[in-house]
Length: 277
DNA sequence: AGACCCCTGGAC
DNA sequence: GTCCAGGGGTCT
Image (cartoon, rainbow, N blue to C red; front, side, top):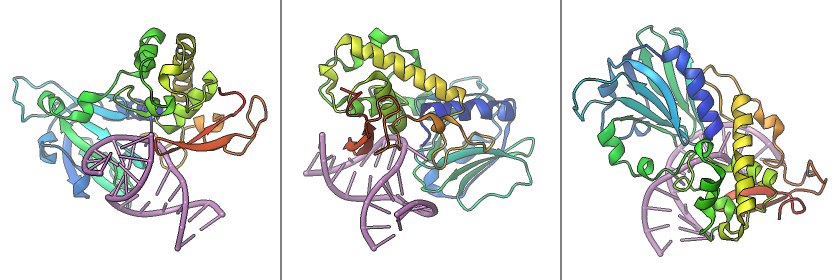
């Protein structure tokens, strides 16, 4: 999926097209794509008030309903995983072969949830649903909301490889394979370093470099490697500025040493053996 | 920490 | 054919 900058971009590009609109129809074309206790029909008639993000989850909020009926959703959570797209299309646009859910708005435009690999999911949420959703409950802090000292304290006492720790959504929410590698390169940290062997200065630098990468990527509307698109179907541009991701064997942009590839936490990992220690 | 699972398409 | 892919869950 889209990682934090891509989900943030989708939330931002979705907002103007859906805010203030009510949900007039829901069609689930792949049953596995709709998850959770609340049925698709539970979102009918609700008016969208805002869009947002938590980690890599895209959130669509509904106007607050009066009362505390826990069977009524107050939003929608979407996880795009590896290949999901959320696209706003005019009425005349036909669904594609990988469209899994169609949400029709009261202005007759559609939100298509396309997902080639079917890993993604969508669910209606409210306070009760979120309280019993362990993935949600375990999510770590938001990377862009952390001060360097608080960031450092997340890793100081953990013995796992720093790359694996960055990918762990219960430690930090929103970092995926691309931004883990890019952040570690900018911070000059070898991805296999155990978290507890990095001193405070290096962890603080990692925090600032990570936040810089994320902000730059958001400004470029994210990275389009394969499937990711904004809600208007546009590609991002940040992939053009990768320094290590997808560049194994190519020269380091700083020192010219060929970049190495290894595997950490089951994910391919690219780094510079000279610049990253 | 690692292996294997979900699923599909693209590169080689 | 085989291997790989922005993720995460589960089981050893």
